[in-house]
Each structure stands twice: as C-alpha cells, then as structure tokens.
Image 1 (cartoon, rainbow, N blue to C red):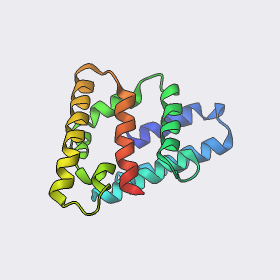
Image 2: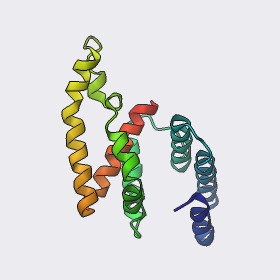
Image 3: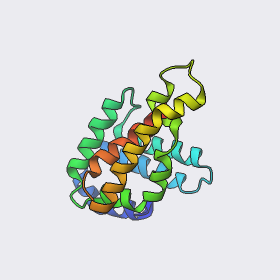
Length: 158
C-alpha cells in the first residue's frame, strides 16, 4: 500500500478521529511519503523512523516503548496489513537481517575484532533468518518478525 493510498484510507475514516490523532497521521504520512523520494537507504530509513515516531508523538527512549506501541498497532490491524507488508518487503527485510552491526551482541565487547564480533552474531542472524523463512512459508508469527525488524532499526537509529 502506498502512502497516497494510506492517506485516502485515513481520510475516509477521519470523521471518527480526534484532531490530535489526525495531525499525527498527517505528519506520519507526510514523512513517509518524503521517504519514498529518497535514493539513499539510510536517509529513507531515517525519514521512515520520523514518520513512525510522529504516530507515537515523541521519540522513543527504550525499545520496550516501541514494542508496546507496535502491540497497540497490531491489535487494531484487523486487515493484517502489517503481515502483508512484511511479506511484500521480504527481500529487503532478509537483507537487513544479515547486517551484523545491527545486533546488540555485536557491540558487547569493543576489544573483539570484527571477525570475532561477526562470528558471535552469526548464530543469532541464522536463527532470525530461519524464523523469517518460516514466517514467509506459513504466515505465522508476523508479530515476532515485526518486533525483530523494529529492534534492528531501533539499534541502528539510536
């Protein structure tokens, strides 16, 4: 679903929304649409994170806040749009999962060499990849995949 399609969807539902929520949706969709014009992945991701934070209303200071917010979004996603998006973006997500620097364990010991750090997270990466492949095959555990992806994004942007 494009940002323009999302805007039309939310505009059709806006009569049931309070003004503060409408403003948050407008900001989120504006930043999201701006991200679609970016060619560089890092700039696109930053604009998408700003879009996501516009929905929340303030910057996240702990991943538990992100998780809690995502749980709220999941609870109202009756059309399973998040699950569909995760499947649509499977190649991007799969590539993202394989970036060792996005894992907390990679940064645990600054005295380790890059090779040692990469070896340490390789098991974690393979486990996440296996879980993602199973999700693509069965469609089960979309919530966990969403949490995993946002955990990686969160570490990237903090």
